[in-house]
Length: 309
Image (cartoon, rainbow, N blue to C red; front, side, top):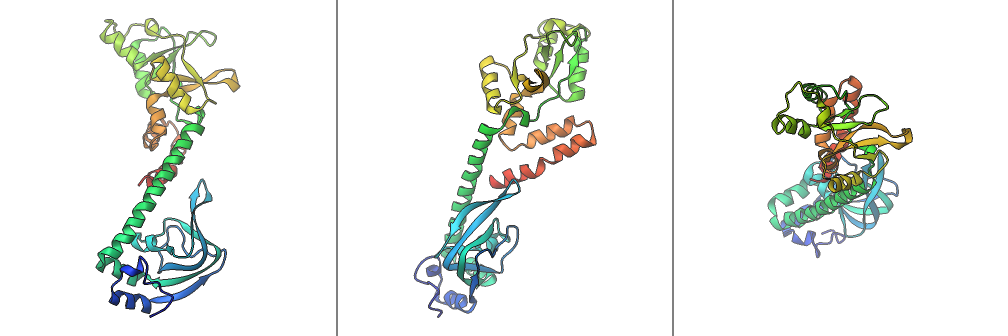
Protein backbone atom coordinates (compact mmCIF):
# COMPACT_ATOMS: atom_id res chain seq x y z
CA UNK A 1 0.00 0.00 0.00
CA UNK A 2 1.00 3.60 -0.41
CA UNK A 3 2.87 4.43 2.82
CA UNK A 4 1.75 8.04 2.64
CA UNK A 5 -1.94 7.24 2.89
CA UNK A 6 -2.80 7.45 6.59
CA UNK A 7 -5.08 4.49 7.30
CA UNK A 8 -4.36 4.74 11.03
CA UNK A 9 -6.57 7.78 11.68
CA UNK A 10 -10.08 8.81 10.64
CA UNK A 11 -11.52 9.06 8.17
CA UNK A 12 -9.35 6.56 6.26
CA UNK A 13 -9.10 4.25 9.29
CA UNK A 14 -12.86 3.65 8.89
CA UNK A 15 -12.36 1.93 5.53
CA UNK A 16 -12.37 -1.85 5.30
CA UNK A 17 -9.38 -3.68 3.69
CA UNK A 18 -11.02 -3.83 0.26
CA UNK A 19 -11.83 -0.12 0.29
CA UNK A 20 -8.29 0.71 1.39
CA UNK A 21 -6.92 -1.18 -1.59
CA UNK A 22 -9.36 0.66 -3.86
CA UNK A 23 -8.24 4.01 -2.44
CA UNK A 24 -4.61 3.04 -2.91
CA UNK A 25 -5.19 2.18 -6.57
CA UNK A 26 -7.22 5.35 -7.19
CA UNK A 27 -4.77 7.69 -5.46
CA UNK A 28 -2.28 10.10 -7.01
CA UNK A 29 0.00 12.60 -5.33
CA UNK A 30 -0.58 16.13 -6.62
CA UNK A 31 1.08 19.46 -5.93
CA UNK A 32 -0.73 22.78 -6.14
CA UNK A 33 1.47 25.85 -6.13
CA UNK A 34 0.70 28.99 -4.14
CA UNK A 35 -2.03 30.98 -5.85
CA UNK A 36 -3.64 28.01 -7.57
CA UNK A 37 -7.31 27.22 -7.02
CA UNK A 38 -7.89 23.46 -6.81
CA UNK A 39 -11.61 23.94 -6.15
CA UNK A 40 -13.95 26.66 -7.38
CA UNK A 41 -17.40 27.51 -6.04
CA UNK A 42 -20.20 26.02 -8.11
CA UNK A 43 -17.95 23.51 -9.87
CA UNK A 44 -17.69 19.76 -9.38
CA UNK A 45 -14.48 17.99 -8.40
CA UNK A 46 -12.92 14.90 -9.97
CA UNK A 47 -11.01 14.13 -6.77
CA UNK A 48 -11.07 14.39 -3.01
CA UNK A 49 -7.84 15.86 -1.64
CA UNK A 50 -6.21 14.64 1.57
CA UNK A 51 -3.69 17.33 2.55
CA UNK A 52 -0.14 16.15 3.31
CA UNK A 53 1.66 19.48 3.48
CA UNK A 54 0.97 23.16 2.87
CA UNK A 55 -1.90 25.57 3.46
CA UNK A 56 -5.13 26.45 1.62
CA UNK A 57 -7.90 28.90 2.38
CA UNK A 58 -11.63 28.79 1.66
CA UNK A 59 -13.03 31.99 0.14
CA UNK A 60 -16.66 33.12 0.18
CA UNK A 61 -18.04 35.67 -2.27
CA UNK A 62 -19.81 38.54 -0.49
CA UNK A 63 -20.79 41.84 -2.04
CA UNK A 64 -18.71 40.99 -5.14
CA UNK A 65 -15.60 40.49 -2.99
CA UNK A 66 -13.88 37.27 -1.92
CA UNK A 67 -13.58 37.03 1.85
CA UNK A 68 -11.59 34.36 3.78
CA UNK A 69 -13.71 31.82 5.61
CA UNK A 70 -11.46 29.00 6.88
CA UNK A 71 -7.88 27.69 6.69
CA UNK A 72 -6.87 24.13 5.82
CA UNK A 73 -3.60 22.27 6.41
CA UNK A 74 -2.06 18.81 6.92
CA UNK A 75 -4.66 16.20 7.87
CA UNK A 76 -7.58 18.15 6.41
CA UNK A 77 -9.74 17.00 3.51
CA UNK A 78 -10.72 19.21 0.57
CA UNK A 79 -13.37 18.48 -2.01
CA UNK A 80 -15.54 16.04 -0.04
CA UNK A 81 -18.46 18.49 -0.07
CA UNK A 82 -18.03 19.05 -3.81
CA UNK A 83 -18.22 15.30 -4.47
CA UNK A 84 -21.12 14.64 -2.07
CA UNK A 85 -23.22 17.64 -3.12
CA UNK A 86 -22.13 17.77 -6.76
CA UNK A 87 -20.44 21.16 -6.54
CA UNK A 88 -18.10 23.08 -4.28
CA UNK A 89 -19.75 25.64 -2.04
CA UNK A 90 -16.64 27.81 -1.78
CA UNK A 91 -13.48 28.55 -3.73
CA UNK A 92 -10.21 27.26 -2.29
CA UNK A 93 -6.95 29.10 -2.93
CA UNK A 94 -3.48 27.74 -2.09
CA UNK A 95 -1.59 30.02 0.30
CA UNK A 96 1.46 27.75 0.70
CA UNK A 97 2.41 25.03 -1.83
CA UNK A 98 -0.10 22.25 -1.20
CA UNK A 99 0.87 18.58 -1.43
CA UNK A 100 -2.11 16.21 -1.42
CA UNK A 101 -3.31 12.71 -2.05
CA UNK A 102 -5.96 12.97 -4.78
CA UNK A 103 -8.48 10.12 -4.53
CA UNK A 104 -10.78 9.56 -7.50
CA UNK A 105 -14.27 10.95 -6.81
CA UNK A 106 -16.09 7.81 -7.98
CA UNK A 107 -14.09 5.56 -5.63
CA UNK A 108 -14.80 8.00 -2.80
CA UNK A 109 -18.55 7.93 -3.59
CA UNK A 110 -18.58 4.13 -3.64
CA UNK A 111 -16.99 4.06 -0.18
CA UNK A 112 -19.65 6.45 1.12
CA UNK A 113 -22.44 4.28 -0.26
CA UNK A 114 -21.11 0.98 1.10
CA UNK A 115 -19.55 2.07 4.41
CA UNK A 116 -21.96 3.68 6.88
CA UNK A 117 -19.25 4.64 9.38
CA UNK A 118 -17.17 6.32 6.70
CA UNK A 119 -20.23 8.17 5.37
CA UNK A 120 -21.26 9.20 8.90
CA UNK A 121 -17.84 10.75 9.53
CA UNK A 122 -18.20 13.04 6.52
CA UNK A 123 -21.89 13.76 7.08
CA UNK A 124 -21.12 14.80 10.65
CA UNK A 125 -18.38 17.04 9.33
CA UNK A 126 -20.73 18.63 6.82
CA UNK A 127 -23.32 19.21 9.55
CA UNK A 128 -20.71 21.00 11.64
CA UNK A 129 -19.74 23.11 8.65
CA UNK A 130 -23.37 23.98 7.98
CA UNK A 131 -23.68 25.07 11.61
CA UNK A 132 -20.67 27.34 11.21
CA UNK A 133 -22.08 28.79 7.99
CA UNK A 134 -25.44 29.41 9.65
CA UNK A 135 -23.76 31.15 12.61
CA UNK A 136 -21.80 33.25 10.14
CA UNK A 137 -25.05 34.17 8.40
CA UNK A 138 -26.65 35.06 11.75
CA UNK A 139 -23.65 37.24 12.60
CA UNK A 140 -24.08 38.98 9.27
CA UNK A 141 -27.76 39.62 10.05
CA UNK A 142 -26.76 41.06 13.43
CA UNK A 143 -24.40 43.43 11.66
CA UNK A 144 -27.23 44.29 9.28
CA UNK A 145 -29.41 45.25 12.25
CA UNK A 146 -26.79 47.61 13.64
CA UNK A 147 -25.60 49.17 10.38
CA UNK A 148 -28.66 49.43 8.14
CA UNK A 149 -30.13 52.90 7.83
CA UNK A 150 -33.78 53.82 7.51
CA UNK A 151 -33.10 55.04 3.97
CA UNK A 152 -32.00 51.49 3.03
CA UNK A 153 -35.40 50.01 3.88
CA UNK A 154 -38.29 49.70 1.44
CA UNK A 155 -40.36 52.78 2.28
CA UNK A 156 -44.03 53.08 1.43
CA UNK A 157 -44.64 56.09 -0.82
CA UNK A 158 -46.14 59.22 0.67
CA UNK A 159 -49.72 59.50 -0.64
CA UNK A 160 -51.20 62.95 -0.04
CA UNK A 161 -54.87 63.93 0.32
CA UNK A 162 -56.72 67.12 1.25
CA UNK A 163 -58.56 67.22 4.62
CA UNK A 164 -61.86 67.50 2.78
CA UNK A 165 -61.25 64.31 0.83
CA UNK A 166 -63.69 61.58 1.77
CA UNK A 167 -63.02 58.39 3.69
CA UNK A 168 -63.93 56.54 0.52
CA UNK A 169 -61.26 58.43 -1.43
CA UNK A 170 -58.74 57.64 1.28
CA UNK A 171 -59.45 53.92 1.07
CA UNK A 172 -59.30 53.95 -2.72
CA UNK A 173 -55.95 55.77 -2.61
CA UNK A 174 -54.54 53.22 -0.16
CA UNK A 175 -55.71 50.33 -2.31
CA UNK A 176 -54.47 51.86 -5.54
CA UNK A 177 -50.97 52.64 -4.19
CA UNK A 178 -50.60 49.54 -2.03
CA UNK A 179 -50.17 51.46 1.24
CA UNK A 180 -51.82 51.37 4.65
CA UNK A 181 -52.01 55.11 5.31
CA UNK A 182 -52.36 58.49 3.64
CA UNK A 183 -50.81 61.80 4.63
CA UNK A 184 -53.10 64.80 4.90
CA UNK A 185 -52.55 68.55 4.65
CA UNK A 186 -54.49 71.54 3.41
CA UNK A 187 -51.48 73.26 1.83
CA UNK A 188 -47.70 72.77 1.60
CA UNK A 189 -47.25 75.17 4.51
CA UNK A 190 -49.85 73.51 6.75
CA UNK A 191 -48.97 70.99 9.44
CA UNK A 192 -49.37 67.50 7.96
CA UNK A 193 -51.26 64.66 9.58
CA UNK A 194 -51.81 60.98 8.97
CA UNK A 195 -54.82 58.72 8.46
CA UNK A 196 -54.12 55.01 8.77
CA UNK A 197 -56.20 52.07 7.67
CA UNK A 198 -57.02 51.44 11.34
CA UNK A 199 -58.23 55.04 11.72
CA UNK A 200 -60.45 54.58 8.69
CA UNK A 201 -61.96 51.35 10.04
CA UNK A 202 -62.56 52.93 13.45
CA UNK A 203 -64.33 55.86 11.80
CA UNK A 204 -66.68 53.60 9.86
CA UNK A 205 -67.24 50.88 12.45
CA UNK A 206 -67.07 52.75 15.77
CA UNK A 207 -67.98 56.36 14.98
CA UNK A 208 -70.81 55.70 12.52
CA UNK A 209 -69.04 57.74 9.84
CA UNK A 210 -70.25 57.50 6.26
CA UNK A 211 -67.89 56.66 3.37
CA UNK A 212 -68.44 60.09 1.83
CA UNK A 213 -67.69 62.01 5.05
CA UNK A 214 -64.59 64.23 5.05
CA UNK A 215 -61.60 62.52 6.62
CA UNK A 216 -60.41 65.63 8.51
CA UNK A 217 -61.98 64.56 11.84
CA UNK A 218 -59.92 61.37 12.01
CA UNK A 219 -56.50 62.71 11.06
CA UNK A 220 -53.76 62.35 13.69
CA UNK A 221 -51.29 65.18 14.40
CA UNK A 222 -48.43 65.73 14.97
CA UNK A 223 -46.65 63.16 12.86
CA UNK A 224 -44.33 60.68 14.56
CA UNK A 225 -41.26 60.73 12.37
CA UNK A 226 -37.73 59.41 12.06
CA UNK A 227 -34.82 60.65 9.98
CA UNK A 228 -33.76 58.72 6.90
CA UNK A 229 -30.18 58.66 8.21
CA UNK A 230 -31.06 57.01 11.54
CA UNK A 231 -30.28 53.37 12.22
CA UNK A 232 -33.21 51.23 11.06
CA UNK A 233 -33.41 49.45 14.40
CA UNK A 234 -34.19 52.81 16.02
CA UNK A 235 -37.49 52.87 14.12
CA UNK A 236 -38.56 49.72 16.00
CA UNK A 237 -37.68 51.39 19.29
CA UNK A 238 -39.66 54.49 18.33
CA UNK A 239 -42.74 52.49 17.29
CA UNK A 240 -42.63 50.51 20.53
CA UNK A 241 -42.28 53.62 22.69
CA UNK A 242 -45.08 55.48 20.92
CA UNK A 243 -47.38 52.44 20.50
CA UNK A 244 -47.72 52.87 16.74
CA UNK A 245 -47.10 50.53 13.81
CA UNK A 246 -45.94 53.12 11.28
CA UNK A 247 -43.78 56.24 11.29
CA UNK A 248 -43.08 58.97 8.76
CA UNK A 249 -39.57 59.14 7.29
CA UNK A 250 -38.07 62.60 6.87
CA UNK A 251 -34.82 63.66 5.21
CA UNK A 252 -33.19 66.28 7.41
CA UNK A 253 -30.56 66.89 4.73
CA UNK A 254 -33.44 68.24 2.64
CA UNK A 255 -35.02 70.44 5.29
CA UNK A 256 -37.20 67.68 6.72
CA UNK A 257 -38.75 66.64 3.41
CA UNK A 258 -41.05 63.63 3.84
CA UNK A 259 -39.73 60.66 1.84
CA UNK A 260 -42.41 58.12 2.75
CA UNK A 261 -43.59 55.98 5.64
CA UNK A 262 -42.15 52.90 7.33
CA UNK A 263 -44.16 50.17 9.04
CA UNK A 264 -43.15 47.59 11.61
CA UNK A 265 -43.88 44.76 9.16
CA UNK A 266 -41.47 46.19 6.61
CA UNK A 267 -38.74 46.61 9.22
CA UNK A 268 -39.07 43.05 10.49
CA UNK A 269 -39.17 41.71 6.94
CA UNK A 270 -35.96 43.58 6.16
CA UNK A 271 -34.25 41.72 9.01
CA UNK A 272 -35.57 38.30 7.96
CA UNK A 273 -35.39 37.08 4.38
CA UNK A 274 -36.36 40.26 2.48
CA UNK A 275 -38.76 38.16 0.37
CA UNK A 276 -41.84 40.06 1.58
CA UNK A 277 -40.17 43.34 0.68
CA UNK A 278 -39.48 42.26 -2.88
CA UNK A 279 -43.12 41.28 -3.37
CA UNK A 280 -44.24 44.53 -1.79
CA UNK A 281 -41.94 46.58 -3.99
CA UNK A 282 -43.19 44.78 -7.10
CA UNK A 283 -46.81 45.36 -6.06
CA UNK A 284 -46.14 49.09 -5.70
CA UNK A 285 -44.15 49.37 -8.92
CA UNK A 286 -45.66 51.80 -11.39
CA UNK A 287 -42.89 51.71 -14.02
CA UNK A 288 -40.41 49.37 -15.68
CA UNK A 289 -37.62 51.08 -13.73
CA UNK A 290 -39.35 50.25 -10.43
CA UNK A 291 -39.68 46.59 -11.43
CA UNK A 292 -35.99 46.49 -12.36
CA UNK A 293 -35.07 48.02 -9.01
CA UNK A 294 -37.02 45.31 -7.17
CA UNK A 295 -35.43 42.55 -9.25
CA UNK A 296 -31.96 43.68 -8.15
CA UNK A 297 -32.80 42.48 -4.63
CA UNK A 298 -33.34 38.88 -5.73
CA UNK A 299 -29.64 37.78 -5.82
CA UNK A 300 -29.14 39.06 -2.27
CA UNK A 301 -32.29 37.21 -1.14
CA UNK A 302 -31.00 33.98 -2.69
CA UNK A 303 -27.62 34.43 -0.96
CA UNK A 304 -29.22 34.95 2.45
CA UNK A 305 -31.63 32.02 2.11
CA UNK A 306 -28.83 29.76 0.87
CA UNK A 307 -26.65 30.71 3.83
CA UNK A 308 -29.50 29.94 6.22
CA UNK A 309 -29.97 26.48 4.71
